[in-house]
Length: 143
Image (tube, rainbow, N blue to C red; front, side, top):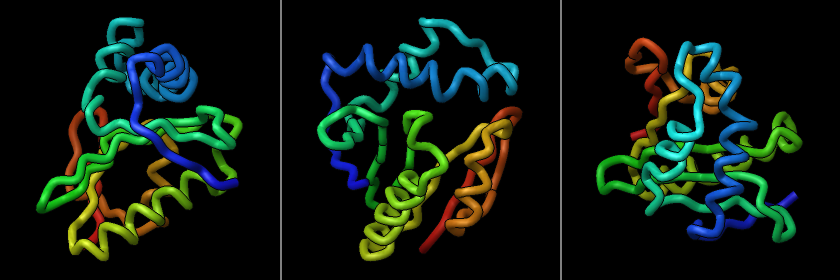
């Protein structure tokens, strides 16, 4: 499956809220973090300027927020519809981002909830924990 990406628009917000509910509520609950519509909306709108909708055959299937700063790229959010999880789609997307960042000579960072099993994928890709807080591990790879 080949993903395409396009900038998000206000019209995508209902899909993004539903995607967040589907993909994150369980991890947030396991982390003891509040789950409600207002907090979902705040998170969807965070870094909206760098958000891209992930599409499979033109159908929305996920979200990528990648902030490209001069000294570091930050994966702010990456979410895939549950039907695509565990099929290598996220791994392939991340590998492309990491290859592009390596060509640009910049490290890539992200944060992952301690209760989120995606941490294992990030470690397999070479990310290392460089810090943590009560709920998240902060990870980095590269330069």
